[in-house]
Image (tube, rainbow, N blue to C red; front, top):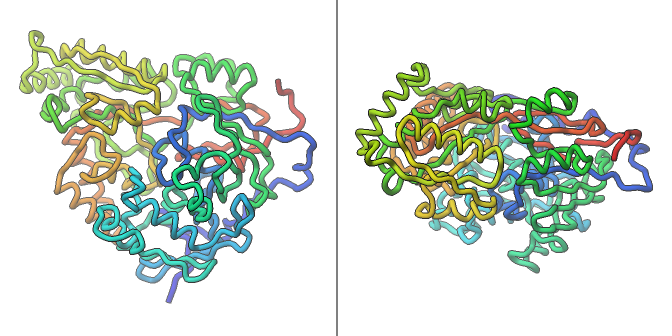
Length: 541
């Protein structure tokens, strides 16, 4: 017997969610002039190849260009996407999806089950070199394929017919339907990939299946996407053109927003938060976010191969000062890895988090000395961050704390985002690097799995066989309470090894013009352009 269900995290969601209740009436969409949305997108995207992307700015664009078997509603809850329905076997291991009859690629071709097979196989294929391939380990044989032990064709995904896809899991996975909205699971237009190869994701070549299609990419300027007339729900998409503007300089982004050049910002400078509260209160959106800000340490070689030094650096930071005086835009101090608000989970905190500041600093100094450092022999390091005034201010504050409390000499190095993506792949090229990790799905495991010894995003090089075993146990545990206990144990273990210096939990923060309707903050900070609309009668520059 099969159970027809939408299993979201640890709950059930009715199939009735497949239709949006806020559909835009057809008559409001007819206009001689196209409706254009100008969005800030953070740094320059590294790629728009969905199976190789690894950063947030590209992911937001890809959510407009593509659609997975599942997708998200405006509140980031999982709902049917290109699959209109599915069944789950009684043992929770076999998922059978029905592809929508109206699902089309942006060139009009029908989306077939085999396109999803091709996309999933491409992600796990070693030749793709996806740093996210491990996210698909729940699928049977995925791990062996990623590690080169089996060919991609052995991935347990099969097209039963043109509109029916079967996926077999290695073990029941509570968050699997959430995972199927992630870019690594997007389908591949096989004909265009065969024609263009690695260039298939460039403008003019990219054939996508989402609400928008890629029409232009001007490096260090913008990415333009136009409404896909073949999208199955195109009748409910009001905005004709979305322009994503690269905005690493967040002060400039705020100026462009105030000048009317942007309708929706990627973020805003923390130094202007109070001014924005006073002057743009109705346009400010500042809400909890499933994301953690931390400094990665190269623990594979000296000086950070000494855990005492790593702990000393962590304890010497006053996170309350950082969040209340430096960022000061809703962030909260991080004394654990997993942010609050992740469904069905509350993680551990460092025991020393409750100590008074003087006690924490005293212990940090003791550990620093035990690691062999002193005023006459100070630690000399570089703090590397991607170009951003917010990141610079945080780095200045932390370097000052390390100098004041421990005597550390830290030099600040900033790099453009695309450059830093390359730098962080080579641990010998950096000491301390700013990293932000945003959950790929609403489950604590998304924060834990990146510290697996073989994970492509494990930049510190943390390797602990017992931790890897815990992750395997979590992946195979069907009892939800026992699973939470194991995740708590794993989180505490990696925290106490200090491969990263945890600093704060993000808040998502945007400025959105009053005439942009349909925006709703959500913990994932996923903001699909297809849910937004622009009022026709407004005073717009």
